Length: 333
Image (tube, rainbow, N blue to C red; front, side):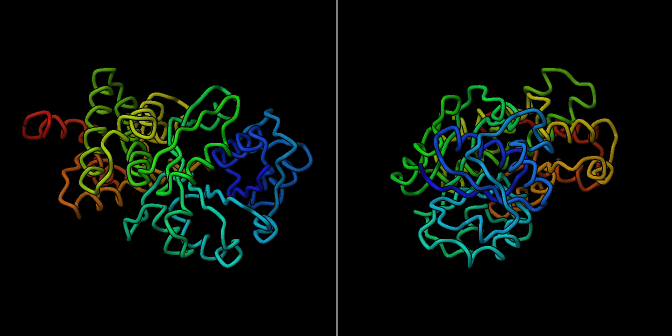
């Protein structure tokens, strides 16, 4: 049994806590709100996100970050990507010196265009052997229901990735390992932007030809940027790339696809944000992802146009036809 701390009691943080507990670990969740902690500790339920789903007794919750990390061997981070730097800055001095940080976040930081592992390294001073990421087709509610799923755990140190494999290999969750942290993170962040785009097409009433085309070209765009930055292209063909992309673009459980559908139906970003408490990471990160691609001279029409729609600079319908109007070229280009 390992002591694991999970910062974030949202849907994915809670679902991954369940996986960790099912795999035989002692799990403490840090939650911002006392009422969430009470529900987890007294009723073994996160009624905010998963009403009716019982959590294992090995999971407890606290609002005290110092209490949460006491004795932790692994610290899992599952907060909104754009708040990571601020939150981790408040917690960093509490972290055990040898704890391994595990990022569940799929975003790119606005302003700096840093990936989440880079933010963790900057704020904590942890080396690459102490920073890992989890990425794959992992819709949180299905994970919480213990439906069979797989994912990738990436760390520059493969022995650490192997330790993390053992940490979360449960009867319903199968982890694979990788050393390509960059590829896994870019695949996870970019698929949210593509899902926004696919959601807009669905919201506009377009069919499978349109959505399949967007998914395919979105994957090509992701691979272009990932390879430019030094990732293994095969990562984008695996669970952290194609697998995550298909799940996020295909499922009505996907917050990013749902956000995109509402944009396609004519709602503004502000109206959508006001109507839901769930965070669509793609809406937050799309501008940063386009900036990252632009900095490296990578053609990124999906990220560019999605960012424009999210910012209210063009309509979803205009975006779709702007894709068609682009100059024709060889498919590999």
